[in-house]
Image (cartoon, rainbow, N blue to C red):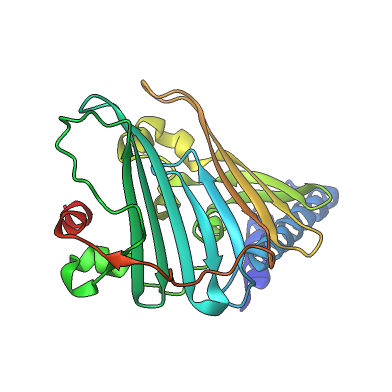
Length: 263
Protein backbone atom coordinates (compact mmCIF):
# COMPACT_ATOMS: atom_id res chain seq x y z
CA UNK A 1 0.00 0.00 0.00
CA UNK A 2 1.52 3.35 -0.97
CA UNK A 3 1.92 6.34 1.32
CA UNK A 4 -1.19 8.11 0.06
CA UNK A 5 -3.33 5.00 0.55
CA UNK A 6 -2.03 4.54 4.10
CA UNK A 7 -2.73 8.15 5.01
CA UNK A 8 -6.24 8.04 3.56
CA UNK A 9 -6.96 4.71 5.25
CA UNK A 10 -5.92 6.16 8.60
CA UNK A 11 -8.09 9.21 7.98
CA UNK A 12 -11.02 7.01 7.05
CA UNK A 13 -10.72 4.96 10.23
CA UNK A 14 -10.70 8.13 12.28
CA UNK A 15 -13.78 9.48 10.51
CA UNK A 16 -15.73 6.24 10.95
CA UNK A 17 -15.06 6.33 14.67
CA UNK A 18 -16.17 9.95 14.98
CA UNK A 19 -19.86 9.96 14.16
CA UNK A 20 -20.31 13.64 14.92
CA UNK A 21 -18.30 14.85 11.92
CA UNK A 22 -20.31 16.50 9.16
CA UNK A 23 -19.99 15.59 5.50
CA UNK A 24 -18.31 18.94 4.93
CA UNK A 25 -15.78 18.21 7.68
CA UNK A 26 -15.01 14.83 6.15
CA UNK A 27 -14.35 16.35 2.74
CA UNK A 28 -12.10 19.04 4.20
CA UNK A 29 -10.08 16.52 6.23
CA UNK A 30 -9.54 14.24 3.25
CA UNK A 31 -8.59 17.23 1.06
CA UNK A 32 -6.03 18.44 3.63
CA UNK A 33 -4.52 14.95 3.83
CA UNK A 34 -4.22 14.67 0.06
CA UNK A 35 -2.64 18.13 -0.17
CA UNK A 36 -0.09 17.34 2.56
CA UNK A 37 0.93 14.05 0.93
CA UNK A 38 1.20 15.79 -2.45
CA UNK A 39 3.39 18.56 -0.97
CA UNK A 40 5.67 16.03 0.74
CA UNK A 41 6.07 14.02 -2.47
CA UNK A 42 6.83 17.14 -4.50
CA UNK A 43 9.45 18.33 -2.02
CA UNK A 44 11.16 14.94 -1.70
CA UNK A 45 11.45 14.83 -5.50
CA UNK A 46 13.17 18.21 -5.34
CA UNK A 47 15.98 17.07 -3.05
CA UNK A 48 19.29 16.54 -4.92
CA UNK A 49 20.28 12.94 -5.64
CA UNK A 50 23.38 11.27 -7.05
CA UNK A 51 21.99 11.92 -10.53
CA UNK A 52 21.71 15.68 -9.93
CA UNK A 53 24.19 18.03 -11.64
CA UNK A 54 26.99 19.70 -9.68
CA UNK A 55 25.70 22.35 -7.24
CA UNK A 56 26.85 24.70 -4.49
CA UNK A 57 25.55 24.55 -0.92
CA UNK A 58 25.61 26.71 2.20
CA UNK A 59 24.49 25.57 5.66
CA UNK A 60 24.10 28.19 8.40
CA UNK A 61 22.99 28.11 12.01
CA UNK A 62 23.52 24.43 12.76
CA UNK A 63 25.97 22.85 15.19
CA UNK A 64 28.73 23.13 12.55
CA UNK A 65 27.97 25.62 9.73
CA UNK A 66 29.76 24.89 6.46
CA UNK A 67 29.59 25.32 2.70
CA UNK A 68 30.97 23.73 -0.45
CA UNK A 69 30.17 21.97 -3.70
CA UNK A 70 28.59 18.58 -4.37
CA UNK A 71 29.66 17.04 -7.67
CA UNK A 72 27.91 13.68 -7.65
CA UNK A 73 28.59 12.92 -11.35
CA UNK A 74 32.32 12.97 -10.50
CA UNK A 75 31.81 11.37 -7.07
CA UNK A 76 33.32 14.44 -5.45
CA UNK A 77 32.52 16.97 -2.72
CA UNK A 78 34.13 19.94 -1.00
CA UNK A 79 33.40 21.21 2.52
CA UNK A 80 34.61 24.47 4.05
CA UNK A 81 34.33 25.15 7.79
CA UNK A 82 35.13 28.52 9.41
CA UNK A 83 34.90 28.91 13.18
CA UNK A 84 35.92 31.63 15.60
CA UNK A 85 37.84 30.11 18.52
CA UNK A 86 37.97 32.16 21.72
CA UNK A 87 40.47 29.98 23.59
CA UNK A 88 44.22 30.35 23.24
CA UNK A 89 44.14 34.09 22.69
CA UNK A 90 41.45 33.88 20.02
CA UNK A 91 41.82 32.99 16.33
CA UNK A 92 39.82 31.90 13.31
CA UNK A 93 40.01 28.22 12.40
CA UNK A 94 39.47 27.44 8.72
CA UNK A 95 39.29 23.87 7.50
CA UNK A 96 38.74 22.99 3.85
CA UNK A 97 38.31 19.47 2.55
CA UNK A 98 38.19 18.16 -0.99
CA UNK A 99 37.19 14.55 -1.66
CA UNK A 100 37.26 12.64 -4.95
CA UNK A 101 36.00 9.10 -4.42
CA UNK A 102 38.46 7.61 -1.86
CA UNK A 103 41.07 10.36 -2.16
CA UNK A 104 41.08 13.39 0.14
CA UNK A 105 42.91 16.68 0.53
CA UNK A 106 42.79 19.34 3.25
CA UNK A 107 43.74 22.95 3.97
CA UNK A 108 43.88 24.06 7.60
CA UNK A 109 44.76 27.53 8.90
CA UNK A 110 44.65 29.45 12.20
CA UNK A 111 44.26 33.12 11.26
CA UNK A 112 45.15 35.55 14.02
CA UNK A 113 46.56 32.90 16.38
CA UNK A 114 49.14 34.25 18.86
CA UNK A 115 52.75 33.23 18.24
CA UNK A 116 52.82 31.28 21.52
CA UNK A 117 49.58 29.40 20.82
CA UNK A 118 51.39 26.12 20.18
CA UNK A 119 49.40 25.53 17.01
CA UNK A 120 51.29 23.77 14.20
CA UNK A 121 52.51 25.51 11.07
CA UNK A 122 50.88 23.72 8.16
CA UNK A 123 51.38 24.08 4.39
CA UNK A 124 49.22 26.68 2.68
CA UNK A 125 48.74 24.37 -0.31
CA UNK A 126 46.33 21.47 -0.43
CA UNK A 127 47.64 18.60 1.72
CA UNK A 128 47.18 15.10 0.31
CA UNK A 129 45.84 12.77 3.01
CA UNK A 130 46.68 9.09 3.23
CA UNK A 131 43.68 7.06 4.41
CA UNK A 132 45.97 4.64 6.25
CA UNK A 133 47.14 7.47 8.53
CA UNK A 134 43.61 8.63 9.36
CA UNK A 135 41.44 7.25 12.14
CA UNK A 136 38.55 5.01 11.04
CA UNK A 137 36.02 7.83 11.58
CA UNK A 138 38.08 10.44 9.76
CA UNK A 139 38.77 8.07 6.88
CA UNK A 140 35.05 7.36 6.51
CA UNK A 141 34.17 11.06 6.67
CA UNK A 142 36.78 11.85 4.01
CA UNK A 143 35.49 9.33 1.47
CA UNK A 144 32.78 10.11 -1.07
CA UNK A 145 29.90 7.85 -0.11
CA UNK A 146 27.17 9.09 -2.41
CA UNK A 147 26.52 12.31 -0.50
CA UNK A 148 23.97 14.46 -2.33
CA UNK A 149 22.04 16.23 0.45
CA UNK A 150 24.58 17.70 2.91
CA UNK A 151 21.93 19.80 4.67
CA UNK A 152 19.72 16.76 5.36
CA UNK A 153 16.73 18.46 3.74
CA UNK A 154 15.14 15.08 2.99
CA UNK A 155 15.33 14.24 6.72
CA UNK A 156 13.54 17.48 7.58
CA UNK A 157 10.80 16.83 5.03
CA UNK A 158 10.27 13.28 6.25
CA UNK A 159 9.98 14.55 9.84
CA UNK A 160 7.52 17.29 8.89
CA UNK A 161 3.75 17.55 9.25
CA UNK A 162 1.22 19.96 7.82
CA UNK A 163 3.24 20.73 4.70
CA UNK A 164 1.33 22.87 2.24
CA UNK A 165 2.13 25.20 -0.64
CA UNK A 166 1.83 28.81 0.51
CA UNK A 167 2.96 30.44 -2.73
CA UNK A 168 4.42 29.45 -6.08
CA UNK A 169 7.19 26.98 -5.21
CA UNK A 170 7.06 27.92 -1.51
CA UNK A 171 5.97 25.46 1.21
CA UNK A 172 5.52 25.60 4.96
CA UNK A 173 4.83 23.17 7.79
CA UNK A 174 6.44 22.06 11.04
CA UNK A 175 9.47 19.80 11.53
CA UNK A 176 10.14 17.38 14.38
CA UNK A 177 13.74 17.93 15.46
CA UNK A 178 13.66 14.77 17.57
CA UNK A 179 13.32 12.84 14.30
CA UNK A 180 15.98 14.90 12.48
CA UNK A 181 18.94 14.68 14.87
CA UNK A 182 21.17 13.48 12.02
CA UNK A 183 21.07 17.01 10.60
CA UNK A 184 22.70 18.40 13.79
CA UNK A 185 20.44 21.46 13.75
CA UNK A 186 20.75 21.89 17.54
CA UNK A 187 22.98 20.25 20.13
CA UNK A 188 21.68 17.69 22.64
CA UNK A 189 21.35 20.25 25.44
CA UNK A 190 19.20 22.58 23.33
CA UNK A 191 17.07 19.70 22.08
CA UNK A 192 16.40 18.68 25.67
CA UNK A 193 15.62 22.27 26.70
CA UNK A 194 13.12 22.64 23.84
CA UNK A 195 11.10 19.73 25.17
CA UNK A 196 7.81 19.25 23.32
CA UNK A 197 8.50 22.39 21.26
CA UNK A 198 11.17 20.43 19.40
CA UNK A 199 8.48 18.26 17.81
CA UNK A 200 6.83 21.14 15.93
CA UNK A 201 9.20 23.92 14.87
CA UNK A 202 8.35 26.10 11.84
CA UNK A 203 9.78 24.82 8.55
CA UNK A 204 9.83 26.65 5.24
CA UNK A 205 11.08 25.30 1.89
CA UNK A 206 11.44 26.68 -1.62
CA UNK A 207 11.77 25.12 -5.06
CA UNK A 208 13.13 26.63 -8.26
CA UNK A 209 11.28 26.66 -11.59
CA UNK A 210 12.53 23.13 -12.28
CA UNK A 211 11.21 21.78 -8.99
CA UNK A 212 14.60 21.58 -7.24
CA UNK A 213 15.14 22.50 -3.59
CA UNK A 214 16.78 25.91 -3.27
CA UNK A 215 16.22 26.67 0.40
CA UNK A 216 15.10 25.10 3.67
CA UNK A 217 14.68 27.19 6.81
CA UNK A 218 13.98 25.96 10.34
CA UNK A 219 13.04 28.58 12.93
CA UNK A 220 14.14 27.36 16.36
CA UNK A 221 12.49 28.99 19.40
CA UNK A 222 14.41 30.09 22.47
CA UNK A 223 15.01 27.36 25.02
CA UNK A 224 16.63 27.61 28.44
CA UNK A 225 19.65 29.89 28.11
CA UNK A 226 19.75 29.51 24.32
CA UNK A 227 18.33 32.32 22.18
CA UNK A 228 15.99 31.74 19.26
CA UNK A 229 17.91 30.89 16.09
CA UNK A 230 17.56 29.89 12.44
CA UNK A 231 18.92 26.88 10.59
CA UNK A 232 19.19 27.53 6.86
CA UNK A 233 20.19 25.32 3.94
CA UNK A 234 20.72 26.84 0.50
CA UNK A 235 21.28 24.75 -2.64
CA UNK A 236 22.13 26.83 -5.70
CA UNK A 237 24.22 27.01 -8.90
CA UNK A 238 22.72 23.75 -10.18
CA UNK A 239 24.77 22.73 -13.20
CA UNK A 240 26.84 25.93 -13.12
CA UNK A 241 29.08 25.46 -10.06
CA UNK A 242 32.66 24.58 -10.97
CA UNK A 243 33.19 20.78 -11.07
CA UNK A 244 35.36 19.37 -8.28
CA UNK A 245 38.82 18.28 -9.43
CA UNK A 246 41.84 16.88 -7.65
CA UNK A 247 44.42 19.61 -6.80
CA UNK A 248 47.33 19.67 -9.23
CA UNK A 249 49.96 21.02 -6.82
CA UNK A 250 49.16 19.26 -3.54
CA UNK A 251 51.84 18.41 -0.98
CA UNK A 252 52.07 15.50 1.45
CA UNK A 253 50.28 16.17 4.73
CA UNK A 254 52.70 16.39 7.70
CA UNK A 255 52.22 14.41 10.91
CA UNK A 256 50.75 17.47 12.65
CA UNK A 257 47.81 17.47 10.22
CA UNK A 258 46.93 13.88 11.09
CA UNK A 259 47.18 14.67 14.80
CA UNK A 260 44.60 17.42 14.37
CA UNK A 261 42.25 15.36 12.21
CA UNK A 262 42.46 12.26 14.39
CA UNK A 263 42.33 14.08 17.72
